Length: 215
Image 1 (cartoon, one colour):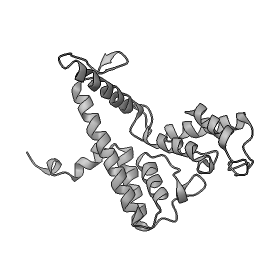
Image 2 (cartoon, rainbow, N blue to C red):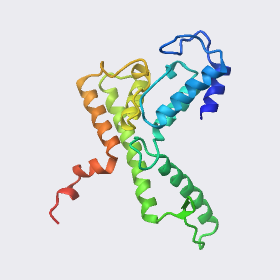
Image 3 (cartoon, rainbow, N blue to C red):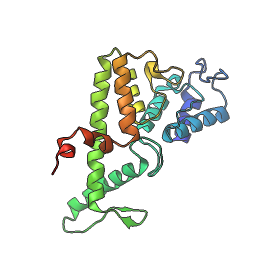
Image 4 (tube, rainbow, N blue to C red):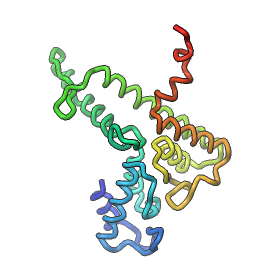
């Protein structure tokens, strides 16, 4: 991803745009482009929240690639937010294995990760997690638009807070902050940060009747 973004910046970036936060200067050097791209990709993937450049001022393709990283997340077992890389890998592998099962319906083809077969119950848990994650993203993005946020800012704020990323898009970009949001929008973003950090099901189960039943 870093290499792709570097190529986009070097070849398509408008040299008149200010892209560095601390030391404003136009893009021109491959080393500078690679350094900023690598820093932003690493920061977004690890949900660290640090920025070295305003990636919303980059070419739109580079910005969208950065935005796609909001949904990746860190490694399993880490304190990073997001969906987590291992879930994406298992979902992708399971999709390809479904194609094989259509061609060979009687074959037993387990989904493997690092050479170890993944139990079906784990795969079944990952799929609803992903569906719930995207559903919350859609509903929350729509909800934020009722508090005055434009489309880009709403989806950026939702993806960023749900994944505990930090910087977002639009009026909540790397050089901006969340201070101008209304109280209602801040409550939504705070709730998204909470469920994103503690994992969705851990918090959302408190709002289900199954948790409160005695039996």
